[in-house]
Image (tube, rainbow, N blue to C red):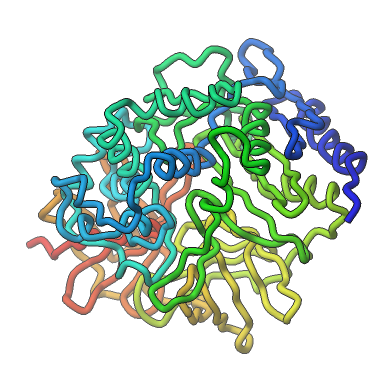
Length: 502
């Protein structure tokens, strides 16, 4: 296949020009091959406040693209991924301590996401929390979200714990490891530990409230799960070295993307901080990243030795723009956007639900773009979650979501609130309280002062709450379980179990 750098560059330039024309926050698009950066474009502002332009050299928060860097460091240090987490972290409770380290990293370990658990208790993501304070929460988890190895559910917890393990093994702060690894390649990654730490030239993250751009803020400490700051040019240089196996990254791409399996032997698309997917007949590898006001994605074609980085400081999807540049470069057609049955769907039992628009799906709060699969069905372009669905009649969808067979039925619009949910509920371990009212609302601990949420009833003793905090929306499922308790469940955390109070 002949690479079309002219066409790829034209698409990249078009994306950057649109940011420039909008005169708001912007980003950079960089094309690279095994030898380094080939083309670079940028537009918009790194700081609207001061009119500073965004360039390919502007440091940005990489967010979850950071994950595979920790995986590289762990592999280089020879840390055994088949050992249980408790081998190093003696304070972890039994359910977490027994999870194999590799499963904690490949998202099949069923580790509840720490931030999601905080959210479910009313602690907003803007709260300033240190690494030790966040770790202390994990040490109080009563259970896992599922049986390890049975489902791929995105969670940052394994990567936060992985950083602690690496620091214990190496005896040095992970920020130094990041600086050393990137420095060997002449690059300038750095890991600030919180939002107050100054990163020279860092782009400000922005989100739009419908009327104006607002600065994003994130209070939790930055960890290996998503804390690295670096420019689009530096990330492209790193990815180029990964493709070429250059310097400290020799042989690393093959190890990072080696197949990972569920307990039943089936293969997961999520590997060690990278997602394996396809563009037409071409195997591609990449990962996205999202922090408040920052959205990023990078894709690579290992076969052709090329890739693209899209880093932005605006709360807008980056996966599709990055994919469109790679498609132009490879001369491949983009996947056909789905025409999915819009509406709210739910499993017959349990907290599992999905809301579809024509071209996307939110499964328990996890968003993915949908395309047609060429076989009469729908599939995700997995930023994080692999989804493959087929229509089963007018009102049912069946298929695999995160490696699990699911059947989802359309929720009737006139579904009433199940009376068993009404009352005051208390979680004794964490002190979380929820009051569900007969008028179809719930007093949720969000933030800690309490917020009234309108509920969306689901059949069989379930309802969805709806909570907004800045640009982020949470829709935890409240469900009356077989033990007569109230469970709180999202895609990333399903461990809170409340008992009726009074």
